[in-house]
Image: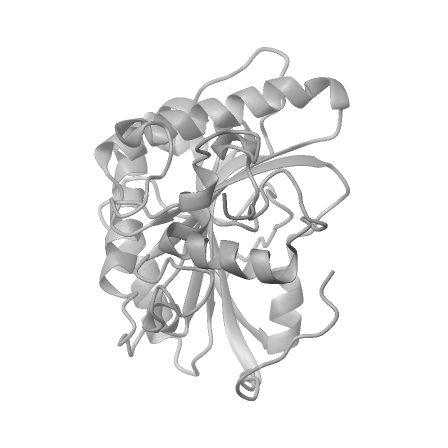
Length: 306
């Protein structure tokens, strides 16, 4: 339980207003032009591979989320927040993402992951707090499963092919309208820290991915878990079915705990290196000092040194 946060520096002041953008592509169009799916992901990945370094000046005020939904949802959606006065760089980013596609962007028609922003004008300016709450994707109460991966480079053809295969695949009797691969922009000042400065070692990634599925009926648990696990393994089959560290990918995010990555009951669970990389031994030393009796523990805890 966290009782108090201590900050080394004063919290940054938010801008008074920001631009929010929402554009979508109809799955009906993407199914007619499958090459557009690859173009969209190539463009998005290449952009953030170019603009996510710690010294980035122009686009460090951009945060973008690409929702690759299952085709049954009806639309793939791109949400963006831009915190500068001039929207021209935001417009240039949107044009770059869509460049070369025959399928043209349109208004979002169906929500996913708690977000539904049908903006016919593609972008709007809102007070910062209102924009922040608009992007709060908590949504209704439901069951859910998450998986994650850090990506250090633009996407490989194998990864894009896996997403196309699984997101256009139907499972009889299973509602996948709230199933998606969410791609978050990442990096810039996050990457200015060294890998050993905090417990989070991923400091040269350009995108962070969240694999998500939501449902309400307990009877559908096994089917949803099986689907998402298959999608994830297929995406990273070149590295053993996981986003291996120090490759095109760099592990997974600890705040989306995923027991498929191993548990404390396993002899050599992958989660220890995927979450913490080389920092895990130091965390074990801290555990040995502050919790030698292992009072605080769970399925993917930091374990005591052996």
